Image (cartoon, rainbow, N blue to C red; front, side):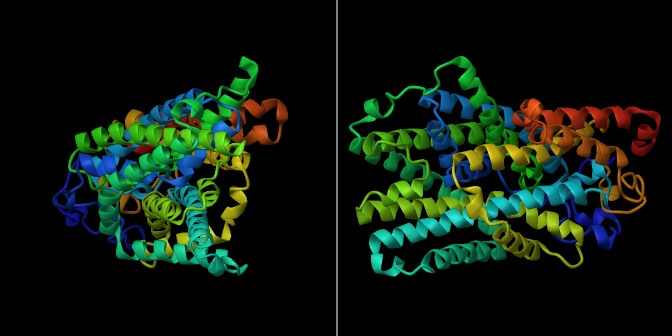
Length: 475
């Protein structure tokens, strides 16, 4: 099996239907991302409004600040495991997620998990674009109220921010790397400044963090905690699949592993604490917790402070959106027809589909956001993660044949390009994970959707690939 390469030409003559420049393995000489790049990537992706709303939603739902931070830290430590495991293939072979998943689903069957992942990313893209547009609209209301009087202004702001995201995508992956490198330290600094400012308004950190849990019994807390923890895992379940899209640029396995181990838990916990503290401060100041930071900032009629805070939120949203929600679906859509769909074209498709998914409805309140959106799609992505990890580490022992990943009738052809074992395992995992939505007595399966889906699909896949017919497909 091929374990390394120096040039893409060593692939021989790849099938044009499975290969283009964006899907090709990254040459070793072009793998330039070090530990700092991965730390800053995670800081930039974590320091965003959805992270803030995730933590503030837990406080609004009744958790104390300690319970909210503990839930977030635990969820991110859990999701770090599949993140690092799936990252290994990207750093070792220089391949993106849609190519990596061909090993388990087949060279054509890989389109199924790739499109599921892409559609979720499109939803996230729409959410981030909507949040960014609303931040611009709120800034106009504060700084220049006359410009915000028109009922169309909000939509113009939304589409303007959407267009800015598209411009960054058009410039390519190196622009994303540049934004992450300079944006991460700035975003954390501004976030801490906002925390200091609002806590001073509320009388200091003591009153802000004095509020306790609203749950009267342990059973009430557990009932809220379980789906919340699944939501925490689901928050990064998307990137846990497509992390090879980033680690394919890594200088070494150590660089990506150390960078992720430092960046993800640290950045998420720190910025989540900011969200928890600021939301708690809003309860002190206004008598109720305000979970949406854009709405909260709009409450303060001080143009300079509001403008600085909203600009920071805009930069954070732009950083996160292009890195977490465009790179993967662009590659996934390109995988459908590499000859016709480039990375740029895939990015434009992501933007259009994100608009069509009506993101404003996904952000109606914290229940829709956490228990509807996050937990719901985790039941789709958990099964894919389970299959990928089992296939790469237990079935193939981290050994892949690069040539077969880009050609028909090779090791990953299976049955007309589709691995039926993987498809059956995926469907079974999704059905079990989401059946609680239909049958109330099984609601607990939905509350654990990511874990249930990953376990069921991973187990079925391993059993299927280890029988006699399965062994023949991997020899």
